[in-house]
Image (tube, rainbow, N blue to C red; front, side):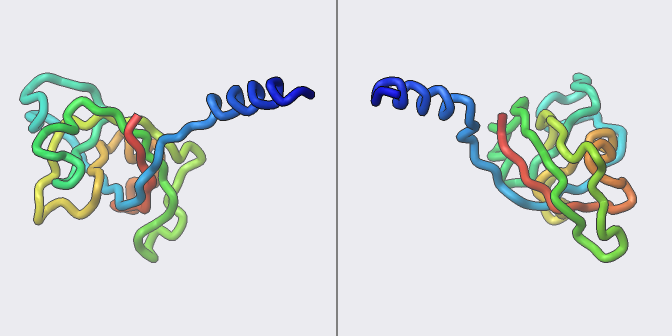
Length: 131
């Protein structure tokens, strides 16, 4: 294989890889009602949503952004293996989870949390990245 063909093959493989970085943190569960929200007031944005902590919310800059969230493990001994067989979900940021009440990085709707983990866990270890 020529050097040019190798170079082209390398570029093709690299274009298929995701270069997005992910962060780790805590995902908590938030039950309905989800309105009003800090980002959209009384406009319904569905149920695959999340509230962001102060660092992620950035004064509202996170509103409408989508995050891919993956359950990576439990946070307590009561539910040692909370992740489901579908441990990844995509959520849209629709709200702010203010301190001191916010106990995680992303406060996931009940529907999005239960897709990736047992709701009885209440909180989970997550990895997440903006899409």
